[in-house]
Image (tube, rainbow, N blue to C red; front, side):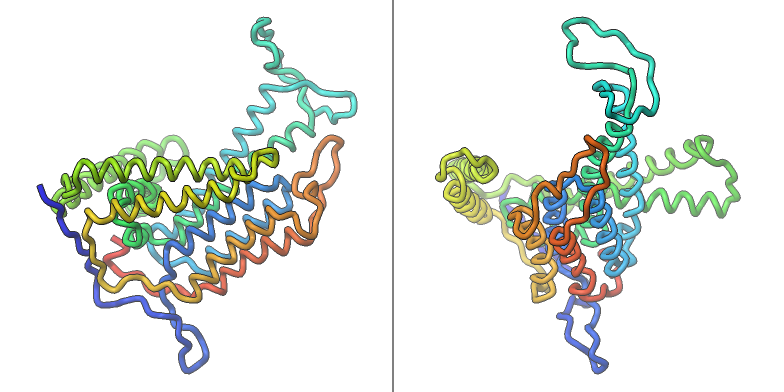
Length: 388
């Protein structure tokens, strides 16, 4: 079979630049979805640098402000609350595991309660099940869980602010099939949120009074049925548009593309290791990462020749996109450079139990990421083609 040329056609309403109107205000438009993903992933990278609970709560506040200010009325934009529930679940699981698999308690720790101790065999040394639990241990585990929860919320913010279907259009041709799979995967959560909300509204209209676990069956079954029907419709639509075709690339071209991508990814991983490990040789840092990036770009260019795609009125990348993405990247870079503050302030200890400080520079850096709330143009109305 030969390669099928795909064309992304959209309604006549096209995104426009945020030019000021007569009142000096910016006209609403949808920000480029990649800009939101770069901002969110950079902020998640900054979160991985610290376990200071005050800074982590500040990150959650920044996410809440940006989402409140710049989310649209699309179905996926109403699902951030579910990511917050998932974040609370992560924190709770982390605390429970730390309490069950206790590591002992010292005389200086603050005793809270004691769980039944389960004796373990000799070969299970180092793991203690049950026993006394201290306040310091629970606070330390809660902080670790809070850091992971903030990273999940950053991904949830990207899913809330960015249109996943529009993000698919900007991927290189070589990654189009992979991009389709990723887009379908990241669209699952927003679509499930939409299904749950629709089922909940239907239950209210039908005077459904069941609450708690008794209402679970009446919600789960319609949601699963709706997800199955949506999957079948998606499969039929993809089949009609030529997905899964063999393509026109020769075997030699595919092998060359795979070799370039594999070597490029190895170079990126080696460069990341060289940058993170201070004892690694110098050539394993920036040089290895540069070579890996060049090889990946060459592989994408070579693989993209076999896929022909056209886009009707592509999303613009203008000053607001640079400002939003740059605010997130700059925040991550400043937190990793340790300029103007003591790195120990990012990772306070709870042994002995003390109140964590709020360092000035990291606080300003996180607030810098929050400027995306007014650097981005106001969101425009959601088109029916994007919301469906």
